[in-house]
Length: 380
Image (cartoon, rainbow, N blue to C red; front, side, top):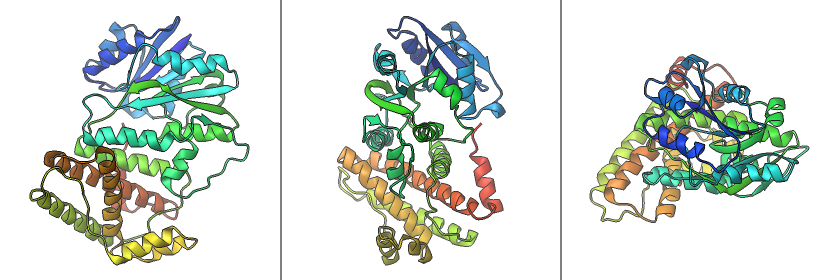
């Protein structure tokens, strides 16, 4: 039997369509298992009406890793397919393609599939999914490493070393029982894939197993998710701190200058002829000196150049992802460009705050103002 395991909370109107698509997969023995953490909409009744085995928990009990372990304990299948409430199989053969390699090779521990943006994905959501696929899709077969080690100190490089994705994945029950998900605040799939590889397991990425999955985030949702995911992945991938320890005044001044630069860019967009082919914020000479040092053996010296660090770091981060987005789309309408500036601006700010929280926690306790930010975006 194959168990499709889905954590839910306020899954919305599309959940019924998604659940029907999973139930309609061309699999002989299939069960749907749902753990709901406090939905106030029709999620629970939808799961019940469509025949899912349903377990409810309080929002305080939810954890990205532990809730998936609970799903596994409630499931009866020997193959456990994990997905999310907003993912829908592209066709009736997605689940079959996901589990086929596991049935063909007893040496495989797990298989991960591929995400496709939903048809209504906005320009940022569409790029985000395709960029994600580029980062984790460098190798179709992930081999075990008895002495697993990272060869790069940057986030994309380390993500490529453990590119596991549980938006669409299948894991052997006996493997997950021996190697359960960890209790982490985000990126539980990356953490699990890394431990699986270090334990000597074989993992496969099968891009034929496709699901529709993307998010048109509201501004606060993007900021919140960026902070959580960035801090979690820094911890999981054991990255060296990317930002120096700064005081509150330096950070507030830098964030204020960054917000001002974004406001100027919004104004400039009104005079730029369509289509928009470039989105860029100004950076100082110190930024380019730091950037050059980060690519050398003297990369730690880059943290000593604190002049205009926060604003430069934020503007440089914005420019990098804006180049990637425009490289994918080619050009944007003026309305799309305004939307992209808002979304990418908050993404970059969330990434920075996640980086800074991680840098601080590696040496000392978080200051009160950062504790408040971290508490306000905590999952639940």
